[in-house]
Image (cartoon, rainbow, N blue to C red; front, top):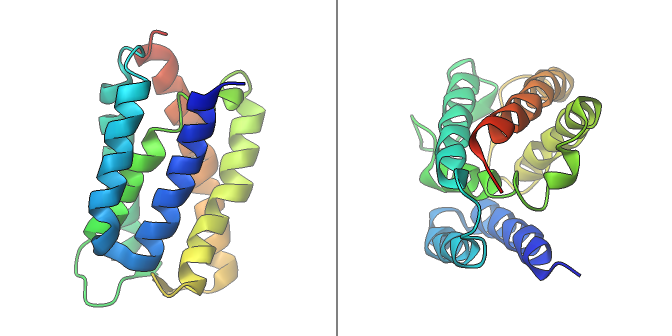
Length: 163
């Protein structure tokens, strides 16, 4: 059993829940989880650069979605810091707990397109974000974006990360 994959998956889900539920107050714990991730997975070369690029893309995409009123964050004219931290935490899953998707662009499109938007809907149900568009148009938009983002992220992984 690969405990590092389990730690990665559990750590990300803990960070996701904590950041969505408690917001900025959970950032220190999420950063500790990221530090633990690097401690246990330091053998992966290029992962830090991949994580920075994925986090940048995430900030860019979510900022654009906020500008086009798909996302509304109470009292924030910019993305909240907890969401930026969440992108950094998500980026740590590409080489580890989501590695099973690496060999199939079809799986990347399906998992990214079908399941990733559900995390935004869960965040909306937990009052972390409001949607400025209908649930259907938000889901379809996120589905298209996330399907493409997953393919892009795994293409970047294949170029940057040497195990």
